[in-house]
Amino acid sequence: MFVFNPGTRIGPQALKNRMTTVLKGTRQIWAGDYQAGPGYGSPEERDGYWDFADAIPVLFTTLDRLQAGGPHAAVWWRCGHRQWETLPDALDNPADRRAWQVREKVRRARCDEERAQRKLERERGAEMERWATKPPEPESLPEVAPCERCGRPITGGQYRQDNAEFTLPEDGRHCPTCRSDLRSTYPTLRQALFGNCQRGR
Image (cartoon, rainbow, N blue to C red; front, side):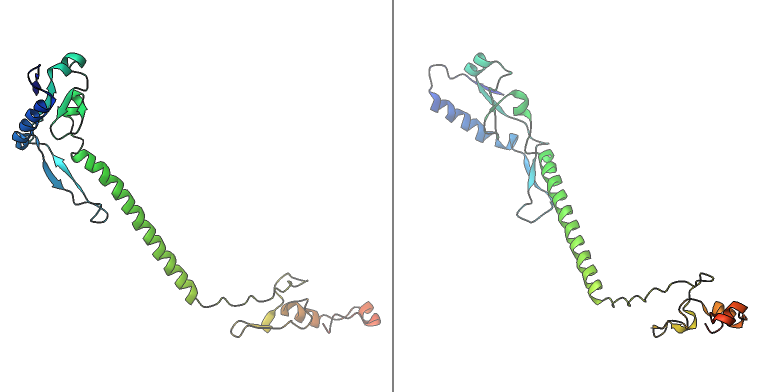
């Protein structure tokens, strides 16, 4: 820490010149080493950070500032920073690896989101292409009522799966087994007299 006491002998410009001389003469002490990070995103977005592991902070102040505000006020000017700060802020390194990691986390999240979006678009495109080349579904066959006697399908042998032919059975009401049973049943006296015979059905 350098405490300058301009007093009444030197003016503000002379004080500023002295600070600048000390700042330039101590640059190798307080300046950190710049590290370029691998980074996410485009080359224009990639940046780095300053490594202050081997650096020694150099701070300036003046006696009149210390007397007016005390050491806990914003009376410190750290070489490399651009404003008067409190002592904790002056000793902090806002441009170090921590700040770079925060920026890198934001870029990584954005890149992951863009990658997921591109993957989703590729999957949608592949799905659309697959549906575009998929053969059409066969037409559904008409529904047929079940047999009135046993409840089984009445299509019998007249429905063929290979060429999708469909025709109604003889009476449209009974399955082949029930039709056979009804044919072999003798007519009742009433059916014989009044002609309501199920034999022909």
